Amino acid sequence: MTIAHNTRAALAKHQLAPKKRFGQNFLVHTSTAESIVRAGGVTADDIIIEVGVGLGALTRPIARAARQVFGLEIDSGIIRYHQEEHDLPENVTLMHQDILKADFQNLADLAQGPIKIMANLPYSISNPFLFTLIENQEKMAWATIMLQKEVADRLTAQPGTKQYGVPTVLLGACATVKRLLTLKPGEFHPRPKIDSVVVRIDFNRQADRLKALPSYDHLLFHRVVRGAFSQRRKTLLNTLSSAKIIPGAADQENIPIKKLTEAAIRRAGIAPTARAEDLNLEEFIQLSLAFSE
Image 1 (cartoon, one colour):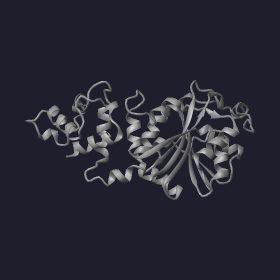
Image 2 (cartoon, one colour):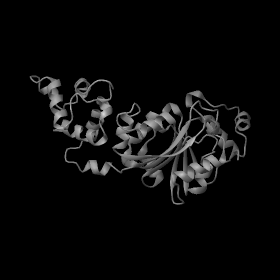
Image 3 (cartoon, one colour):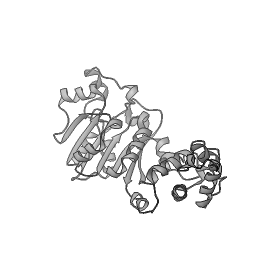
Image 4 (cartoon, helix red, strand yellow):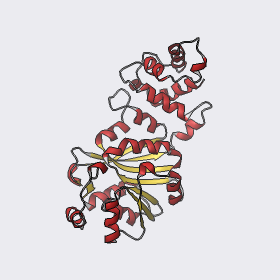
């Protein structure tokens, strides 16, 4: 079933058009939106933060399933459209907000607890958005989001593959990721050039375990992972030496940084000649612990 009001007609009526700078691709099938909400696990008690309201294709089925929806939308034209049409359910509050600049404590207050997000993300902000979630992991419950297939592939990649990288490891340290649905370009207007994938990210599966480790340092872990992947084809010894991960290395002028780095890598039980893409999550954790000693 096509969404009740024709997407093109609705846009034309309000002199709107999908904006490239916002990466707008509007869902055009009600059945698809309903499938996303069902697969996403929205319940009647949930207060949902929706990112990217668009014309409301996803907002309406979320509102039917949830107790309340706070819809964040960056496009002032879309905000005006809904204000003029009065077309959103009563349990939806529309907010003119850029999610990348949002105060997550404020979102948690609105959600009355850990944040639950539903989002049809612009492709252009996928990575910044994911890193924003990671930075605010302690305030998150879960996020069900649409991503371009290549980003979803990176989130669920295995060590030793070209898709495996910084997002895989950092998200894996604080959450579990499950692929729910694959959406073809015809599900959107305008049509993107590639498939999209709906994923659900559940937070705090790994985080509590990591916090219990005596010398685990969240920021150091991030530095180690980013440093290790900074030059994918180079060895850990080279990448981590260049990244100058060793705490207090500046005070150890008589010991070459490369030697300190090699010692830390060996303490983790990892060969200095290994590459970042060869390490699994547990090995990255051990590596960051070794650098904290």
